Amino acid sequence: MATSSGKTIKSTYRNYLLCVLYFVGIACLWVLIRFVGLSSVPAFESFDYDALNHGGLFARAVILGSLIGTVFFFLTRALDTPAIRRRPYGMMIIIYALSNIICVLLVLIALTIMDIIVIKKPFTVSTFEARMMNVNFVVILVYYTLCSFVFVSIREINRKFGPGNLRKLLAGTFYHPREIEIIVMFLDLKDSTTYAERLGHLEFGSLIQDCFIDMSVVTNFEAQFYQYVGDEAILLWDVAEGIENGNCLQAYFAFSHRQAERRDYYQSRYGLVPEFKAGVNIGLATVLEVGEIKREISYLGDVLNTAARIQGQCSVYGENLLISETLHDRFLSIPDHLDIDAIGMTELRGRAEAVSIYRVREHTTAN
Image 1 (cartoon, rainbow, N blue to C red):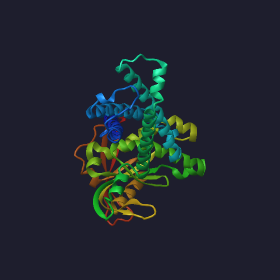
Image 2 (cartoon, rainbow, N blue to C red; image 1 turned 135 degrees about the horizontal axis):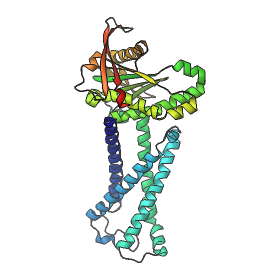
Image 3 (cartoon, helix red, strand yellow; image 1 turned 120 degrees about the horizontal axis):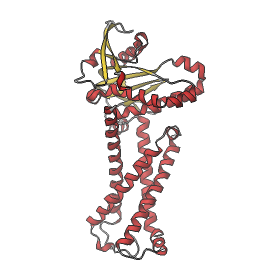
């Protein structure tokens, strides 16, 4: 899908930019700590840093940080595979940090060679070894390694809480209860009871892990992970982001496509291809920070209950994605590859009044 591809590119570019800015920032911090205010700066033996002003040093820091950030970004993307994501957090952080040591080392070696060329010294093994064995070189390598470890740790913790939630917890955004409008999606694995009986609990648990790893694609459509409940997942959107380009609908189909792409893997590993059904609703919810030992952001309100009930109607109507009339009426435009049709009024358990729901399907030509 062209729109899905565009969202993926946008998300990738944003992550790339954040990575580069981080490493440029720590490179500039290094210059600020190490060089600014010093009368003599013997950063590398036999190189005249007195000839460089602070502007030149910061320019070099920007180049170095950009190079390291770029290499690190593409290296971590190459390592961002289900096999690695399923490892314990500590192991993942170590893998990424060690890979960045190699990344930083390669960049510093390249810059060392460039420095030797710039100062017009003959490039010999002894000259290169002298520069590589310089204490300052080792200190820079250790500094960038520690900074990369911090970067990867923060990123994995942010994933643990759900994209964006770590920042909200640190800022105390929801320390006091607030009422906000949100979009909620409940996703549930079809035929989960049958699968659990056939596979056994351990193998079924591995299936759920694989499914939820594939579900990470929804973050390309601004989705926030709220909770995993057994074989169910609850996703949230800020209203503006969820409505834009039908993000809250496109996220579901992007997830479905991801699982379809891995059909051969699921078939060979589990003897089945999982499918999820989903219900989506929009409304007011009370959001607050709860817990002292284990803090998390909690959402309360009828909007969640109704979304869960709508998802339950998928089995009744034989549909994969149903949405509320309230959400349908908020869309300014619908992506061209999607069709939305009214099913009619239906009674939902726990609600006194019947509600109108809509089914969402893709054009057959879009698949």
